[in-house]
Image (cartoon, rainbow, N blue to C red; front, side, top):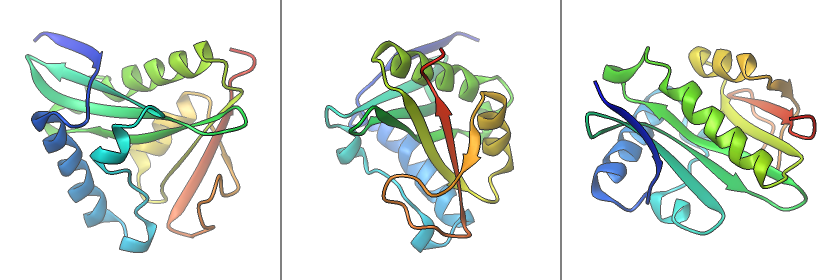
Length: 154
């Protein structure tokens, strides 16, 4: 099983399919008002870097670094297709996001996830994120859980 990680365009057909599957999964688990997703077109701008894990050439997982002002960046669109879960792909993508954010000298990285996304919450907590109040321009919503992590000490 050959695994690769790369920065890819969200506009490529197979990556669009991966992101569409993420959106369908999220919408099945989360009320519409609490889905805070970036479209592939929004992810294609210069503020966002999309990392894709491939197994034997198949787009298996993704995650994005989205840049904001004032030294803050955000983790977006983390997803591993069910058939590829359990291989540590999400952690490896998150590590690449953190490395990139640190190398670009961001001081803080934040994210929003669903209250019922237990695996995601474990991933973020194991990576040193701490639960916090609502971030950026997200509404304070019981469907959402917010996390923050300082990058200054990395």
